[in-house]
Image 1: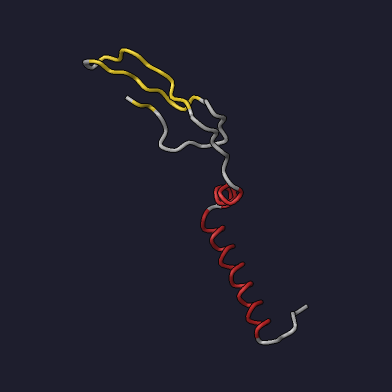
Image 2: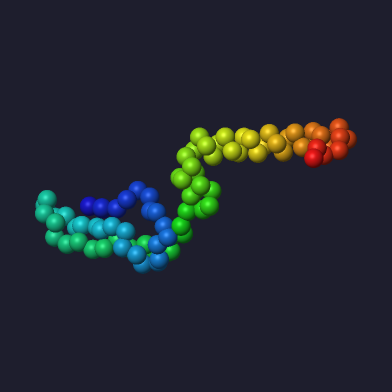
Length: 85
């Protein structure tokens, strides 16, 4: 029987205890061993931390707004307009 989370949240060093494995014989637990991470688990990226702190709707709105501003700037450059100040 394995007792471990579906996903690990880092940062975790290699060899960190992340769960346990129980050996079951005829319905009885006859032994238990620690389940260790083989490699280090990195922490969340900056984008994931921002999404967690701000919430996905706010982050999505920010990305859409940034895309719109970039699109407007590229359109102005293609039409030969000087940048607004």
